[in-house]
Amino acid sequence: MAAAPRPLLLPLLLFTAAVGALLWSSLKLAGVPVGPVHLGILVYFGLASLLLHRWQEGGLEGRPMLFQQRFMAGLVIKMLVSLVLLVVLVLVLPREMVLSVAITFCALYLAYLGFSTARLVGMMRRNGRA
Image 1 (spheres, one colour):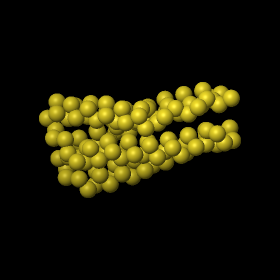
Image 2 (cartoon, one colour):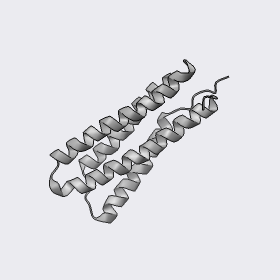
Image 3 (cartoon, helix red, strand yellow):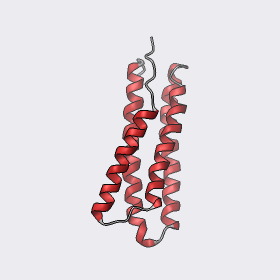
């Protein structure tokens, strides 16, 4: 019997708020002004995670392999879209912003990757598919 899916929105919002506070304090501590690009990156990862999780969790009730296929596809989709976005940002932004934006982007990518992986692997285990 499959366990009921856990709500996604509240944990994702709490995680985004915590990561946002950490981002803001880290940038302030480093003397880097928090700009709309930094906040845009935070919003991008929050929305991308929300959309991908909704899609991935939709396969939980289907065929046993569907969820795992969506899990792996979601990792690849997020990685490729994020890589393209990072390259665009590095090429478009002024030189003095590139380093702080690139570090922010990579740190947030890793943070949301950890959040997504922990949540989805936990769901696979609860449903006896890992």
